[in-house]
Length: 249
Image 1 (cartoon, rainbow, N blue to C red):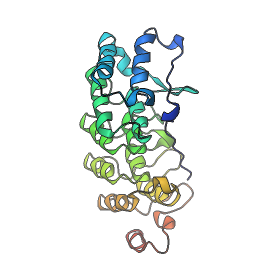
Image 2 (cartoon, helix red, strand yellow):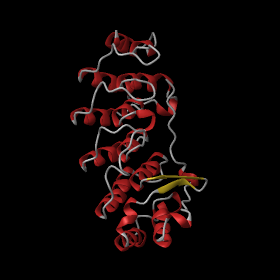
Image 3 (tube, one colour):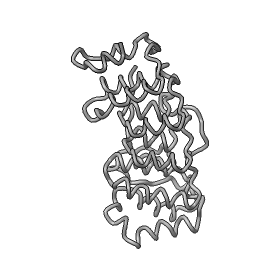
Image 4 (cartoon, rainbow, N blue to C red):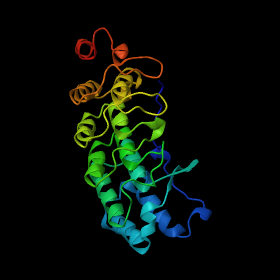
């Protein structure tokens, strides 16, 4: 199981849609500018925030207009997803991100982003996988669907577990997310994702995966379900991880 997840590079987040993609190029440019790194240091001034509000008020459809990854990658994602990228890159705080997202929602942004389809990240999945805990909880509060399967066919619960975001995992469990759902690419449960993220996610990803394991087991996660390669959660445990050895035995 090899999980690869990359965020938008906010340092290169100079957004520019091809002219053919939008008629309202000027207003799109305002939105791109205001949620990119370039303008974030001044974002919370009345002028910048009101500029974004004005653009959305004049054309509310922009609240659901796809924005490219960066100047070199034209792959489009929903604005509520792109806000998560900025949080991951520490270009603004989560409180500021929630303020931005609230404005987009006020003008009709779909809390689930683009129409849901298999292996396409929703804003909630983006938040769970980009370490935007408060934003993820905010999206859930606003009615985000917890069930879609995004990158690698992992749900928000898979990604929160892999990244060790125990706050999100706990909330998703309370929202009745499917505990033993298998992802598409690796046929693995959120419990297996938690252990894989702990073992192979690297130092930047190391967070509260062990807490996620405990939460999932308490919620009924089945530790006897293997990956598509036959590995069990206990196979990812190191000798010195006594608590996990006991929990997953």
